[in-house]
Amino acid sequence: MNMKAQLLTATLITTFSGVLSAADPQLLNLVMPDAKVVAGVNVQQAKGTQFGQWVLNQLQTQDAHLQELVTLTGFDPRRDVQELLVASDGQPGGKTGLALARGNFDSAKILGLATQHGAVTEIYGTITIIEDPKQEGGFAFLSSSIVAAGDIASVKGAIDRQTAAQPLPAAVLVKINQWSTSQDAWGITTVPPASLAPPNSVKGGAPNNPLGNATQSVQSAAGGVKFGSNVVFSAEAVCDTAQNAQTLGDLMKLMLNVAQMQAANDPNAAALIKSATITASGTSVKVSASLPEDVFTSMLQPHKTQIQRERKR
Image (tube, rainbow, N blue to C red):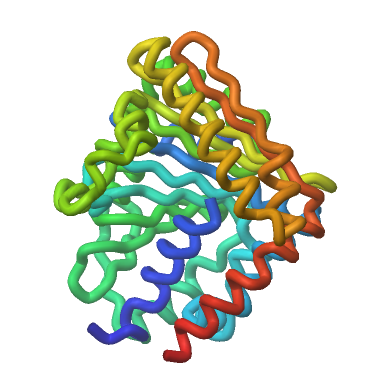
């Protein structure tokens, strides 16, 4: 497939999905009502912190398609996007999904350049959907400040919901509001995380892995990151029974102790592990950890170097 022909669609979808505060109500109204996995990131907040700026800058230095997108259209997600929201119905394989963004878009310019590079268009109602040549994925500007991207059916669904609202279940909205108001980047799943993996991915696994077996009891989960002078990570898993929650918490503490011994020669990793707390209460297991943002950023440098080496092979 011609990569340039799909440049805008692929880059927008990839960028929106990869860069996962309080979720924008207008964007939430566009999410499919059967969404089981939802994640978001307050890009505006990220720009104001050292760690957030570091993450956004990685897009510029690591994503060649993003660089080309900026050159062709002048649209730069790091500058022009304020908030991102991605959602999925939770079906294994991840072939369907919706990414929504609020920002500043020159839709006419992007449309012109997309078609110039081989993208096709479809008029749905009054909205133009810009699609890849196989018409499997695309994006559409729902207004001058909102864009929707994903598989074609999901994009059309978002367009429909502009005029025919189909709200998310109250319990899902409560969970989204809980995490989006306390975290700058967050994600939730209302279905067992194990069910999200493609069926074939569990073959050949380690059936006697105690931690892996314990995670099978998790019915829903959530996590987030709070930017600032300290980068704070939080997560919560809800198990089917209090006993399984206690077992999961105990196993995680054991793994943490083992990791702490192995990290003796890495002060930064040891500090992160030492900051971690694991608490089991009822059917929930909560985990938190934090590091100064400059320390955490320095920890990511070896990972960045490894990625660069692998790309050169």
